Length: 363
Ligand SMILES: *Cc1c(COP(=O)(O)O)cnc(C)c1O
Image 1 (cartoon, rainbow, N blue to C red):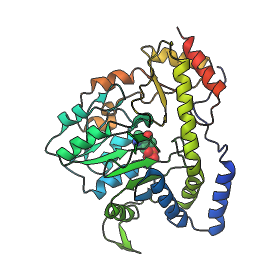
Image 2 (image 1 turned 90 degrees about the vertical axis):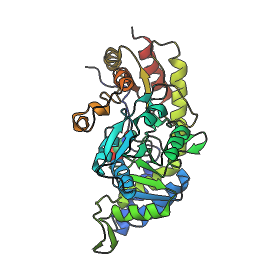
Image 3 (image 1 turned 30 degrees about the vertical axis):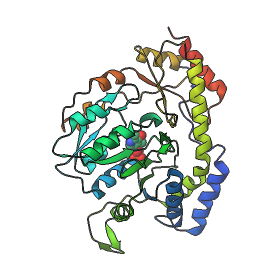
């Protein structure tokens, strides 16, 4: 076994460490830990960063998606069209809301929902379209928004991998009725544990979400509806506030590293990701290879940790398969070829070059 020399990611605070320490100290000294001043301030600051009127902090990105659907009145008997290639949580969130995920195949050039496949999947029960801005690349939002409007469907954006991404210059999360964000530690903006948020321009929807995340309470100890417990805590909100000012710098660094990979891998025997929009934020840098498994072990032998996002199309997950056997041949094919190279803001140029060299010598 060779010790990993280029790890897939690094989660210990780096250049933000002093800011994170200060934030944690502030919360400890105040002695207020759940849904308080840090959460409110983070909601304001995050809404401003994303360019929406409102943000609502919740426990996880999965909860953010499920609660948006619930707040829109989508549940049992309803269908939500989504992508076969994502973290399975996207579809699990639809099921948590009581609705059924229906899978439309991918646009192979960007690995996100193909608008034509979405249109073909619409039925009398369809209530929403749930695209994922996978790996940081915006889905084809203008086309999806047009289809949603034509068929009177809600457009709900899974932005869990796309913090500060834009589509044609406009922030993701602002095309649909709401956007869901995760701040799981590995995301472009990560907390020190689980955390999530919904962004929306609809104040009524935001108010409904604030009730739903907190047990459905309208006033203290008065539960008007059966909400859930999905509150954002003060420590995570304070950490997120400390890191939010770094996010633009970190995003620029991700783009620089992606460009470096593109140059260094131009003649390698792999397919590079297509950048369909300059607003791509490179949560992941995902290449394709017909010999993916061999390439991954070769990289491991070279001390490079490469991971697969995702090895199994969601419709083929046992947890989801029963809801509808979906036919997504493009997703089936790409899942056998995808490989994510290390890319994170703390990574040095020499590390990216070492990864690229290891890919180039693969035969
Ligand atoms: C991380 C992620 C989720 C789930 O977010 P959690 O905070 O882990 O619940 C959902 N969708 C996508 C695309 C993700 O990357």
